[in-house]
Amino acid sequence: DSGVTQTPKHLITATGQRVTLRCSPRSGDLSVYWYQQSLDQGLQFLIQYYNGEERAKGNILERFSAQQFPDLHSELNLSSLELGDSALYFCASSVGPPGYNSPLHFGNGTRLTVT
Amino acid sequence: KNEVEQSPQNLTAQEGEFITINCSYSVGISALHWLQQHPGGGIVSLFMLSSGKKKHGRLIATINIQEKHSSLHITASHPRDSAVYICAVRNTGNQFYFGTGTSLTVIP
Image (cartoon, rainbow over all chains, first blue to last red):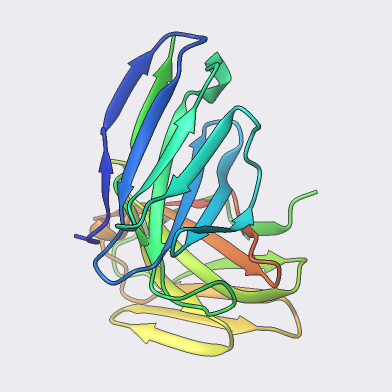
C-alpha cells in the first residue's frame, strides 16, 4: 500500500460533461503529481503541486485544471470531456519540493471512460 | 521524437533467467525512475537513480549519466515478475518523460 488514495476508482460519463478526480497524498508528502495514461499515448505528465502551489506543468490541456488544498489533497478537474480523454489518471506524491529528488508513491488510479 | 526509448518492447523469459531491460534518454535529467505496472493497472516505483547503481532484492538498476543510459536487471526471474516495466526521467525543468514500457512475461 503506497499510502496514496485516489477516488473514484472508476468513472463513466458522457462527452461534454465535467468530472473531478481526487487524490490524498501519503502522509508527510508535500508534492502531488498528476499523470494520464492512455492506450495511444502512454503515460504523460500533467501537472505538479508542492505545498499548495503549482510548480511544474506538462501536457495538460486547457480544459483540465488542478489544485492542491491546504490539507494537501489535490483535485484534477476535467471539463468539456471528449472521447479521447478516456484514460487512467494517476496521482503520485513525494516528500520533496521541485529540484529535490525523492521517490514517487503512486495511487491506484482513476479509470475514466467517456461515452 | 521520443525523449525516452526502451528496449525491448516485449520480453518472454523462462523462470530463473537473468533479464535486462534498457532505457536511453535524450534530455538532461535530475533523476531516472523505474516503474512496475501490473495487469491490474497499479504502478509501483522500483528505483529512483541519479547516479551509479542500486539493488533491491533480485532487482538491480544502473545508470550511466555520460551515455544517457540506464538498465534494469532482474536476477533469477519469477512468474510474479511478469509486468510492464516503465522508464521515466525527470529533467532539470521538472518535466517527466516516459518510455513506452517493456512487457515482461516469465514462464514457469
